[in-house]
Image (cartoon, rainbow, N blue to C red; front, side):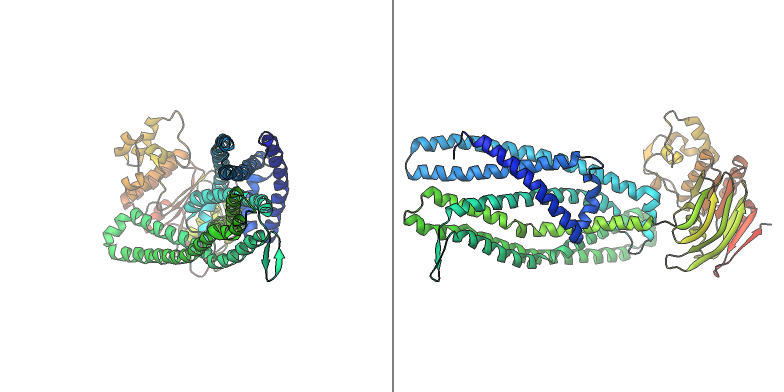
Length: 595
């Protein structure tokens, strides 16, 4: 090798191979997307980020990383030739050449270390940029159109969305880049080292027939047979990996539920039932873990045996030519090094199969997440249109997810300032009607007109993380120059004056406040935001009748022009509503005046 010309030769080698790789790799990705399920799954996640319509930068950055990968292959080829020259100098006792090779090695090692560190930085930067984009993309889809809520009601309910957004996105991006650069490195190395081995290997006579360059055919045949067998051994790992993530996530969710509902469980003394559930779920986790262990023992054990055999394989073939002085020690050592590198790259697809199994499981979870969101966001047959002041239902029919009719042909018109109480037996669709009005329920048809300035209060109010002030202003953000005195007055009006001095305190207010206090805080939100229409779903159920009376009187006094639509079972609610909508189990409804 002419070391003085190697720099220029390597530059053109990398440039040529980069152009070839760009064309071949792009074509291979296109074919995989068109012909395989996992290819389509990959592109559904990657297409938006890598699209030229969005930006060309990610693709340019990716092929820059590919260029660094090719540089690593080139350095390994140079290192292989260095092996030959260095060992030949030892055999020939050529001291000047030996020390010259030591100097050359310093440059090779420096280039390899620099390239490795720079490649790591570029790969991590590429991954972080992609993770940021994909996280935002999925989070926007999940939060848009209340898909985070609607997806709970789709067939095959979406489980563990937190894991899919936080954990699976990172695993998908990092594994995608790792597999892509790994395949490119392996294929390029296979071609390059095959050419080297072709020149190093001699003829071999089998059954009286002399076959030139036999070692090349032997290594390809050896790896092909072992790879097919390894794929057969490793295939069950795909389902086991998917089950492992799902079972662990379910177990983790059950543990979180114990923490969230600790007080209710403690009152019931339900430790026995909870432990039974937790132990049962954990036993499924352990059973699946043992399945992975036994399958990995078979898969990894086979790979280790194959790798150990490959260590002495080239030595046994070439040693005869060495003892006959047909080749030098440098040729023998380079043959072993080239054979090992070629065998390693040919075995890449076998060794990486367990990673690919996990990758497919990750793809299934991410595309399942996106599919659930798309189903949840399917266009509803119910038209929800804005109206300046009135709430109008026209031929509204509400159904269950199974298609059973709950409310049929509801026709109502409520002028601004109306008050209506919705009542009926449990399960007839009272809360579902409010979900439909809010646009959260897709299993309905008809027409709804209502003001956009609406506020919905549920039986268990949502209290966000942060200050009590944040909880009061929710779902709006606290103004930069907030009037603390006015906020304190609101708390006084809903009989939460004892919390006035804690407005700017951060705490887990869901645990600090009783359910009755949380409901009164929700009434304070109503007074603060002054909506045109308010929907209250059992919003005072945790208050005593005296507090409930005070809250509804406060609404009537402070928000006389706000339309109030309540769902509740108490007969005491009749006094605060002029109209009463009774829903029965026969899909019927009846509107009457409260006396």
